[in-house]
Length: 296
Image (cartoon, rainbow, N blue to C red):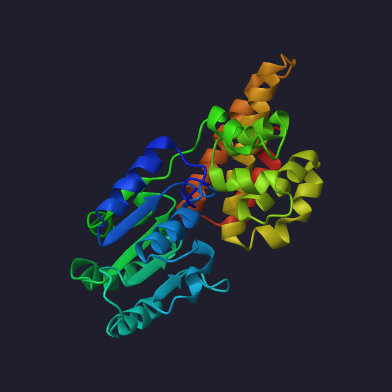
């Protein structure tokens, strides 16, 4: 069994990956929400193209470049792109058609200046190199970048496929709970089922559960840390949306007497706040509104 066969993927995503591997394009764009498993797929594709043994060891390969936004920065700067461009001038060794992989994780963090600097390289890439980007939404990249890529949508898996994949390790109830929370996002499902596995969205979901259990004044106590970190605030909003949608479905299934308007208004508020955060509104005000106006 190959590593791809051991990976849970939506059938259409899997078919698109197989087609790409048979006829590679110089630029692959893996699009899907946080927790969908884009990074693992990108690493697997890269290792397969390089005829490398395991994707977990691909970082040992000298011509594999993995670019990610530094933890202390808001974006991937043009300097990172300039460093990459300089590396691309170095000749690779070997005779395989693909000898270099450039993986840019969460490419939505590329500054506009950095994206523009990449355009020429993506138009005229080295013949032995393939670029792989992961991105949460195509709208977060310049259209001129997107137009040069082979795009694969990393879709969520269905409950039946998840049950068949995980049933040798976990009981059906735990698998179903993980699917309900993740809505089939494979990376997040793995993190939810494996309690020891760390994933930023899993951590945000744990925080969201705690947040919903708190009184309003307790939520406000977190303002000093959350309101200053836009990325963590965005993850909390995503996680709250996931948890509230799961609670909404659970109350319907169990026929609990809960006012459905509370769920609807809460989800509408979160969507509005996410749009405000994307529009660069004041994060302190967004968090304050969340604490005071969320009805759950």
